[in-house]
Structures are given as structure tokens and as C-alpha cells.
Length: 396
Image 1 (cartoon, rainbow, N blue to C red):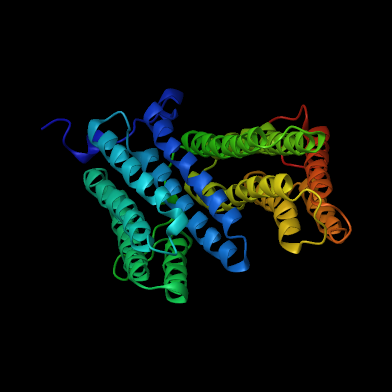
Image 2: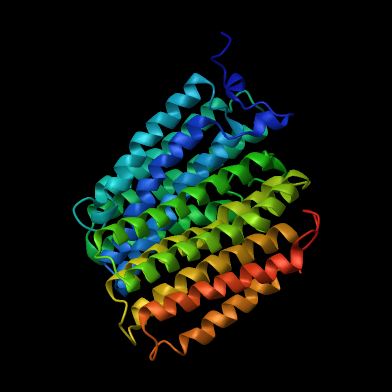
């Protein structure tokens, strides 16, 4: 019957309108505003080495759920009712996942794991069914993907029943399996592995999808800063910290969108194997970008709560690490999509390393201002180097 076959659930391709992100995809992304907020609060509340490892693991997990969904909706049409139903179900599970983040290594570990596995495996099985009439190559791809996610899911669920170090180790194994999948072409004995040519993605859709997600993350960083500022007594210092956090977030927006996203979208739209580029530039390179935004939000909270502290290695690591992770991610992202790493970003990372030597003598809010100035310098350098050049040219 028409409308019930997998082939009729596929996204049309051929015109720019076909690659536009749908309103339902944006609605789905709103769940992840909650996730990003939960991750930044969890890291700030448990700011130890172990807490940082746990927050990193959950960040990797949240990103993996989101980016795999972005890949699936690159092929499947969110305007079709079955696909809409899948996305709404994922939103509900995503809320459960997000709500369990603060206690994921406590009483809600099994809830976190179950929500994650249901999202990953359930979505993959849905795509497998939807792809059954779309060609043998796509169908085999999702058999491989489902196999890898199911194997990782065993470790996620097992970790939910364990406690403390046992849970952490088991979930690290699960995460390594998850992340090794795309890198290995989802190799499955007897089925072989996928090739870059098999991943015929819409490059424009993938670029826009990731850009909108970064907007959400940056927006959450601004909300955290504004909420904290509104709860504190008004003073010159709190105003300076608020402005510093805001300017730092704007600088991140500029660095990603002024040249990075624009050139990446142009490159992937004209690449012969967009799937290969999408895997490196969007699936993997965006991880440190996301992590940098989350750590930046935590750093701003520390600037508000401990502005005059000196010599706190952990707090200084957050302030410099937020900017550093963001620059590393953009360095990777822009290098992958242009063929050449931007010198401005390398220089920015060097400046952040040099600032680390001043950590014992500088107050927290002063270090925050200097880290923000580094982002501004990098943005100005890149703008001076690239303004007026065509989108397809390499970085200098």
C-alpha cells in the first residue's frame, strides 16, 4: 500500500528545499538544551577529576545520540508520519536521558543506560525497516550499524546494574565500541564494512543540522550566564564577569559561523564522497567544539562564584580549557573541510598554553578576561586573513 513502504519514507533529493532542516528536527533539538544544561551543572557540581571523566563520558553519549539521529534524518523524511512518530518517541526518551544525567553514576544509572540504548537501537531498527526497499547498500549499512549499537548496548545496560568504578569502566567500554563503529566502517564478519561511497548524505542538510545544534549550545551558555548574573547582587565585578562570558560566547559564535560553517557547507556540497567528509568534520570534529562550549559555561559560573581566587588549578583549567577545546575542535573542523589548518587557531592555542604559566598569580576573573581576549585575537586574525575570499578557498 502506498505510504507504508520504506522507500516512501525517504527524504527527496535534488533541490535545495529538500535538504532544509524541518521544524520537527528543530523541535527535537530543544530536548538537548536540557541535556547541555544538565551536563554543565553536573560538571560544576562535581568538579573533580572523576567528575570530569564522568561528565565527559555523558557528553560523548549525548552527542552520539544526537548525531546518529541527524544522520538518520538525513535519509528519512521528517514530514512523513512514521518518521515524525519516531522523532517524537526519541524526544520523550531524550527527556528521560537528560533528567537522569545528574544521578547517572548514582541511583539513575540504569535509567540513563536504558534510555540511551532504546534511543540508539530503536532508531537504528526503525531506519533498518525504512531502508528495506531503498537498495541493498543502505539496508546492509543499517544491519551493520544495528549490530554495533546492540553490542555496545549490552555493556551500557550491564553498567547500569553495577556501581562506582565497575559502572564507569563498563560504560567506557560501551562508548569505545560506539565510537569505533564509524571509524571501522561498522565492520561485521560476513557482511564486510561500509565504504565512504555508501554514505550518500545531503551535505547541506548535515552542515545546517550541526550549525543549528551549535547555536543551541551557545544559547544555553548565554542562558547560564544570564541566570547566574540575575541571582547575584549587582556590582562592577559581577557586571565585568557577565560581559566577559557574553563576549566569549559571541567570539565562539563568530569563529564557528563566520568562516567555518560557511566553508564547510560549500565544501561538503561539492565533495565527491560527502559521507567521508561528514564523518570526520561533523561526526567527530564537533565533539571538542561541544565540549568547549560546556566547559566555557562552567568556567563562567566559576568566575561568578570565585572571582578573586588564585592558583586553583582546576578552575583555571576550566577557564583555559573551554577556549582551548573550542579552538581544537574548530582547528580540526576547518582543517578537514579546507585541507589546511588555520594558523590563527594554532597561535590561539599557543597563547592559551602561555597563559597557563600565569595561573598561579592571576585572579580567576582576570584569567577569564584574558582567555576571552585570545578568542577575539583569533577571530580578528582569521577575519583579516580570509575576508573577501571565496568560500571554496583554503585557509591561510
